[in-house]
Amino acid sequence: MGSNQSWVTEFILVGFRLSAEMEVFLFWIFSLFYIFSLLANGMILGLICLDLRLHTPMYFFLSHLAVIDISYASNNVPKMLANLKRTISFVPCIMQTFLYLGLAATECLILVAMSYDRFVAICHPLHYTVIMSWRVCIVLAITSWVFSFLLTLVHVILVLRLPFCGPHEINHFFCEILSVLKLACADTWLNQVVIFVTCVFILLGPLCLVLVSYSRILLAILRIQSGEGRRKAFSTCSSHLCVVGLYFGSAIVMYMAPKSRHPEEQQKILSLFYSLFNPMLNPLIYSLRNTEVKGALRRVLYKQRPI
Image 1 (cartoon, rainbow, N blue to C red):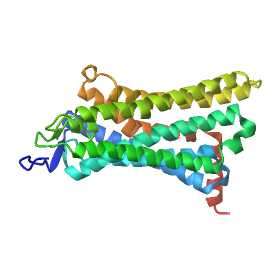
Image 2: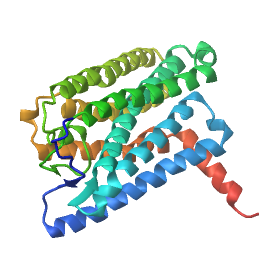
Image 3: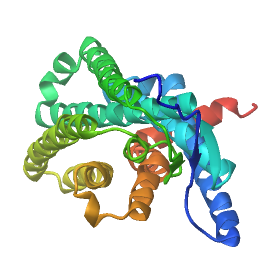
Image 4: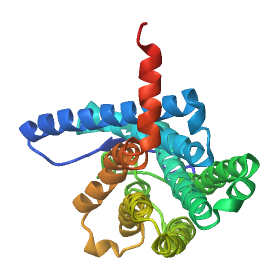
């Protein structure tokens, strides 16, 4: 960057354009959602660590999902709750962008691993322990984390090469990468292309793999003779698909749909979904409705009860 370029040292996060009364109302609502998300995901992590019966591949991936949800919400929501129009320094802004992109990409890949785990468990139950060995699970988890953050590092490097010489108002409630790029005083064509290519590999690719896995699972469910077993398997898979559809769908609309069709305020709402609502919904749908998790919770509570 040339020496005559001025460097923006901080940005103003505009947030939502609301009345003072609505800001106070949303502050308490979002605070409750955030606290519930931390408690629910923290409880899931604690139960998986404490109960040996939950030391299985499915709950291994669920523990990673809980860590991602806690980290993702903590990266974006506290800044939003501080006030709805605030400043953020350049370096923390870039770090926030790096963490939210890395965590979001990791969640996409972990969801693929979870769908593959369910596919093997239902379609190949006799070979499940061999195919989903602990070595395979650990490799899948480490690969998801490392690949996602290395890919995110590419985006951050491409952002850092851009000059930011004003304006400095980010029309968002956190440092979302598309909103940050709008403030660059240079052509961002390369950044936009890399984001789109990344979406193809991180969003469309994993979504197709998840849909293929659950399609095979659905066919296997239809062949189950027991009506109760078929109902239980279908209920579990349908709830999982709802979360996957909402998460991938909102991200695809956010990053791959033509921007002219989606105003900035609508993009903020979409971002709010996978920043706040998705981390809250995941433990409810994936774990707290699960009989094994409920049983683990009862066992932990009974152990703590004095004799």
